[in-house]
Image 1 (cartoon, chains in turn red, blue):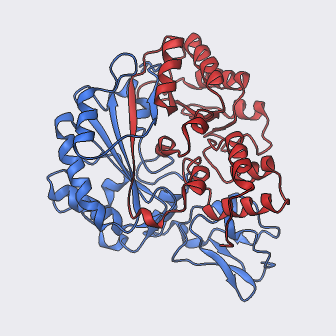
Image 2 (cartoon, each protein chain N blue to C red):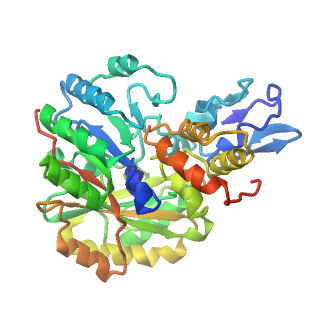
Image 3 (spheres, rainbow over the protein chains, first blue to last red):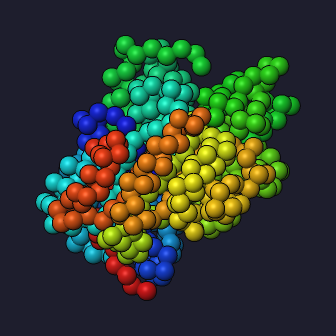
Length: 215
Length: 241
């Protein structure tokens, strides 16, 4: 999950992409955390996530899983990874989390400046930051930024750049629409933080002029 | 992973799903290059094969190949850490654990990401440079710690060096004043690497989501910069045990 802070894209696009983690800590608030995590997940559903996974089930929002199945799977130590496609939803979520006061660590991955504004508005005092100092080393071997803005939306690099190219090609050929192309890309993401709404907009931007060669 | 040739119908639908680019046609059937495969399981989990020809091989949990799975498949539980994933809880629970205290910074060097993956020798290049610079504080609960043969030299266990994984994270917490030393050591290794790494710096915040100025000035002084997005612990955790 470390990689959520390395999501790439324009600031405008990243402002529609806020990852949230619900994270009980072993030895600190692990025992008896299940009903607290469950209440926080109920709030996530009320606000409306773009994607989500509970580590006790590992089925993302587009797998056909029902909310009750996710909620019933939650047991001690369950962590939840989710993503929201607007700052307004992030604000709504954090307001409800603050009011619920369940005492479980909450982490937001997103634009620092915007999270600062939201936190101030909600009355939260963020505790720790994990800054990204970028990518280094043999960067010449990387796929282009246009492809990486899709692949870096999975916290574990499960979305292959070849699949992104394949989807772009199928969208350009009219064999797949941008929403279903995004769901195709979301499916391999086992951490549930691939944002198909942002992905759909990126596919729309790329599909007219961006070209890919057969890999 | 393996594709059973007798079952495969040669549609090729699995091939773009592979993050390693390890699946290709051989005699009109898909086959997995075992050298390139990270054992991440993406091809299987995607349920894309119309005839269920993709399976996990029996040797996937045999040492040292098992490291491929532990470091590359987020649904597998690492035999060393007992948790899913390649790292620890790092900054995510720092509001309750205080693992990275006021006078400290956390460093995470995530090798192989984004996208490229790496041979484990890439980790050794970094652990050697860190050791050469007197930096030995790799997080004890991080799985990389158990792969190091000699902490003084930074050498990994030699039987591991031919394995490939999607990524691994070197994590450590150090006194703030040593941040420039670490960043200088990291700069030293950059030209030696065949793969890539992403670099993280973790610090406790001042009021108003203000990053401590001394941390930012250390980063800038060593020629690094920080991206506009970050991972932020919102301070809502409480200790109840």
